[in-house]
Structures are given as C-alpha cells and as structure tokens.
Amino acid sequence: MLAQLALGEANVTELAQPFLDDMSLPAVTKHLKVLESAGLIEKTRDAQWRPCRIKPDGFKDVAEWMETYRAWWEESFDRLDDYLKTVVARPTPTETTAKGKRHARKPK
Amino acid sequence: MLAQLALGEANVTELAQPFLDDMSLPAVTKHLKVLESAGLIEKTRDAQWRPCRIKPDGFKDVAEWMETYRAWWEESFDRLDDYLKTVVARPTPTETTAKGKRHARKPK
DNA sequence: TCGATAATTAACCGTGTAGTTAATTAACCG
DNA sequence: CGGTTAATTAACTACACGGTTAATTATCGA
Image (tube, rainbow over all chains, first blue to last red; front, top):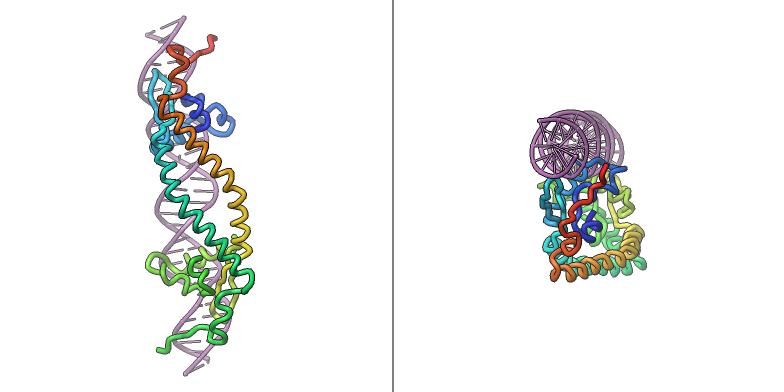
C-alpha cells in the first residue's frame, strides 16, 4: 500500500484492491488507521472518498530514527562477528577456568 | 542473558538472577527453551544444574542470514531517502496531474 | 427522494505470546 | 531417609494482533 501511495494519492478501495482476495475492506481500514496514527500517511476527504497520501515528515522521522540506530546495530553486528572468530578456536570461555570447582555454594 | 552467556557458561538461576524482580523462574525456563530451539544456546546437565552455553554455530547462521539481507535492507533505506528528497520540493505526486477529474466512475 | 457507492464502526473470534502459580522431578548431602 | 536446592512441567490467564461479518454513516447522482 505504501508502494502504491509512493506513486501518488489513492483512496481506500484503490489501496485495498490488490488485497481484496486475501482480506476484507474493514481490515484495510484498520491497517490504514495504524499507518495514520503512526504518522506515515494522511487521510483527507473528498465526498464519500478518503484520499490518502504519504506524509513525508513521518517517513523522515523514521529514517532519522533508523539512522541513529544503524551505527549501534552495525557495531553489535561486528562485535558478534568478532566474538565468533574468537570462539572457533577455544571451545568455551569458562571451560578453561573453574575445573572441578563447579558451583560454589554458600554454606548456611 | 545472551550477554551473560557471552561471558561464559551459566546455569538457569544465574541467568535468571537479574530478572527475578520482574519475572518468575518458569518464565526464564521458557525463554531459554526458545533460545535453545532456535539453536542459539545449548543446555547440558550437571547434577541438578543446567549449565547453558552459547552455540556459536547458531549465531553464525543468524549472522550469515542477516548479511544476505543487509544489502537489500540498505538499498531500500537509500531508496526511501532518495524519495524523500524528491518530495520536499513538490508537495504530492498526483497533485500536478488529474485536476478536477477526481475519480473516473464507470457508467453502468 | 431513493438507490448505489465508499468507508467506517461495532461486536465479535482465533491465535500466538508471555507470563503466572502450584505441583513435580531429580539430584545432592547431612 | 529426609530436607534442600535446581529446574521443569502443567494448567491456566491476560492481552495484543489481525482478521471477520453485519450494521451504520455519509455522500453523490439520476
């Protein structure tokens, strides 16, 4: 639906049309309501039609939000990669330490 | 919990300890079962304890899977960025076309 | 005015998720 | 053996999600 809206304004039935085999119109209405309350689209009115359009600002916000997390995300991705490289050689971190000790239980 | 396991082997109560304010032990057991069935961790047994360790291969699989999607993901991210740049100038794609025409209704 | 069209609302329903408490299993140890 | 500790299982609950059908609202146009 967003792809469709990226091509330009469209009302509910137009957006629903490719999906009507799989779901009902009310389902589409609800879906659209989510997008609207998420600030991604805007619904106006034209008689009995509800033309929808994309809200660029909403997407801009999302894009910015993602950008702030991309760094963190890729870092942890690389950290995982590094960690995996360290593990291939040694079987398991603890296996070298605490041999026979197992679990230190506190005496009452 | 995974962060904890990255530091080395740990049994269930040890993993649960930071969370016991918020959730019960059975909840942790279930959580761990999900991780295990996802191939991310491995549970062994040591008397009444169940030491868990990370399963590097599982993470390797995830890492590889993510890598295959990273390209696609970043592409669509950039496409969105491009699209937003085109939108800031012109208000809305359709607004220029179809003026006064509105909705062509098929005559019965 | 009345019928058709566009869309929404109301009232449900099934399922998956994530948790709970209480009971149960299993092992250790004095 | 009997108590304690570790963990799991069983049975249940609450809730969000995503959908449904049927009814309702609102508008246009002949």
